[in-house]
Image 1: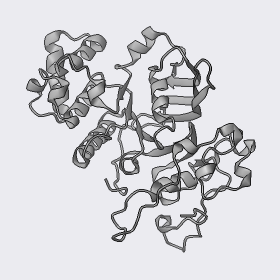
Image 2: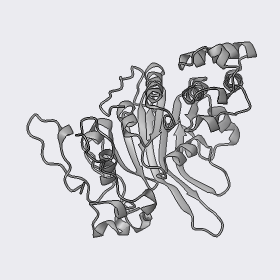
Image 3: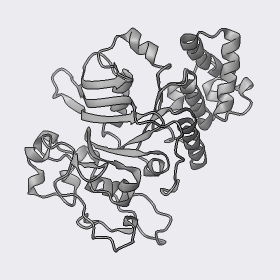
Image 4: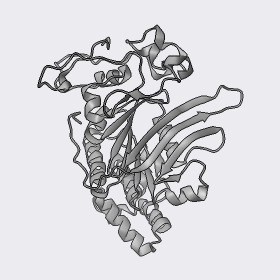
Amino acid sequence: MSIEAMPPESGLRTDVPVLEVEDLSVTFVRRGEQPTRAVDEVSFSVAAGETIGLVGESGCGKSVTSLAVMGLLPRRGVQVGGSVRLGGTELLGASDRTLRRLRGSEMAMVFQDPLSSLNPTVPIGTQVTEVLAEHRGLGKKEATAEAAELLDRVGIPDPTRRLKEYPHQLSGGMRQRALIAMALACSPRLLIADEPTTALDVTIQAQILELLRELVVDTGTALVMITHDLGVVAGLCDRVHVMYAGKVIETADRHDLFARPRQPYTGGLLASVPRLDAGRGVPLTPIRGSARDAIPWAEGCAFAPRCDNAQDDCLTEVAGSTVPLEYDGPGRELRCRHPLTYPPSPTGATSSGSTASGAGR
């Protein structure tokens, strides 16, 4: 997908947050081992009709954040702190009964791997209709008719026949559409999509993203898109939160982020994306090292070992956990001591063609 793709504006969009996440932290604890902080004081909000992106490499805490919001983390060996409010209702610490009532009806999630998310021993129709029966109280006949309409809505051909089939009988794209149909069954106010296009070919990816875009525009659903694919972000999201080692390190409007990334990590992610306008044979510019090379935030900036802009003052406690996201212009926040800089744009020129200096790439 082209990173210049433009999503339509939603007529149902409001500024009232549907989901408010404040200082969310998730720590995994094992006997005899050091605790692992997977999510570290993450804050964001999403309003009706808005799409936000949580972006970063695998292991940055994106999926754990979504599982904490949905209340799907195990009770044992996990410490969760902060606040997660859905329409003003606090979810952290809520009873299992409350969460079961909200999941499916008020909030829903599309998981990364549809084959493992669907029950392989139960027909698709049964899995969709049980959501309708549980949360909307529909009878078998009504639920079956509604399920067929849902499958048709998400683009599954011959939906009546597909209701009787098992997950292994559907293609990867159809299974993902079936998951989306289940998520949409009760018109939730919040939808979380965790890498919904990872295992799909580019044609099916485009169809799934178009389906999600139409959902946000037509129903005003608040959408949280979790992905490492910046093409998906450019074509779907309004605002973007870049995560690294459990923390949000840059927040910006999608246009600003792509035009002038400030965090060297964000700049590295963008530089590693293949471009259609690049010359033939031009190599990609990957970020050196891997996410495993991160240092604890308590010792400095976690990205410092991989950062070409890193200096001595990045490897101090002050540069790590004690430095919050700071104002970096209208609608932008940044956690970095030595961000990417840009030459002044000529009068009347756009910033999209600007070249970052100090990136070392």
